Length: 189
Image (cartoon, rainbow, N blue to C red; front, side, top):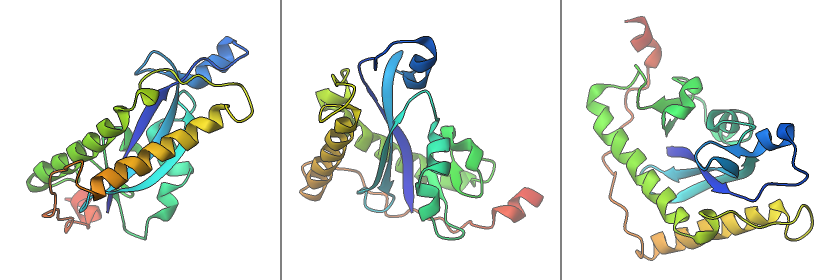
C-alpha cells in the first residue's frame, strides 16, 4: 500500500536548443526545462519505498511513467496505489484518486490525509536548493543529466534517514482502511 506522485526539478536547457527538442524537457510548473521523478511512500509508515527516474518533463505525464516504466509492474494482483488526479487513467484498476467515483465518502478524509503526508515528504525533498534551482549540467560525462539522478537518489536516502531518526516528524495514518476493493460492483450499482 503506497502513495505515488511525481516530483519535478528544474534543469538548464539541454543543448543544442531547438523547438522540437525543447518540448521534450518543458515543465509546466516551472515554465522551463525539467526532470520528473516518480516517488512512492508507504501509507502506513510514510517511508520512501520507491524512486524512479529521471524522465524529461514534457515527454510523459505522471500516469504514463507509472503505467509504462515500473511501479505498476510491481503491484500484486488486485493491489492499487493512492494518487492525485494526475493518475486518473488508471482508475479503478490500479489507482485510487481523490475524484474517483469508486471512493467511499467515509474514506475520503483518510485518503486526503495520506496524500497530504506524501506531499509533506515531497516538500522535504524540495528544501534542497539543487531541486529548486536549475541544475547545471554538461551534455555528457560525469556531470551530465545522469548525475542529477545520483543527486536526487542521495536526497531521498538522506530524507529517509531523517524520517527514521525522527528528525522529520510525519503525522500518523495508521487507521487507513482499504477494505472496499470490489469496485466492479460499485460500477454496476
